[in-house]
Length: 140
Image (tube, rainbow, N blue to C red; front, side, top):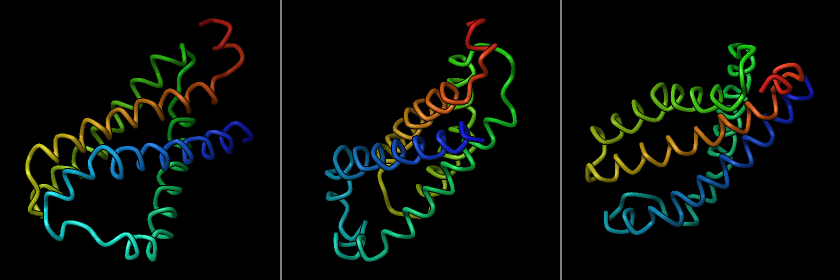
């Protein structure tokens, strides 16, 4: 249980940090090129609690699901595989849906998928490293 809680906390911090880097640094020029594509900084901060809560739930479920499906194998390949699987389960469908609903260039949707995939592989590695068994760690 301690490993799960630690994995949730670390995954949450990394998720929030990488979200900032992806959306507020790397993709902000793309967003700025689309008039009215996002709220003002004040509007975002007013509703920031909702994003923070949603990202916490995502991190918690991401770590929890990993702990229920991990195998007694090396943690690194499992973490990478889990990140890829979760990308296809969450990031890709969400990005494609957003592309259909909102007026954004297809390259922005591609960037969402690439960035999200990298994020989830990193999270998969972090969660796998934290939640590895002692016996599995020695076998690796």
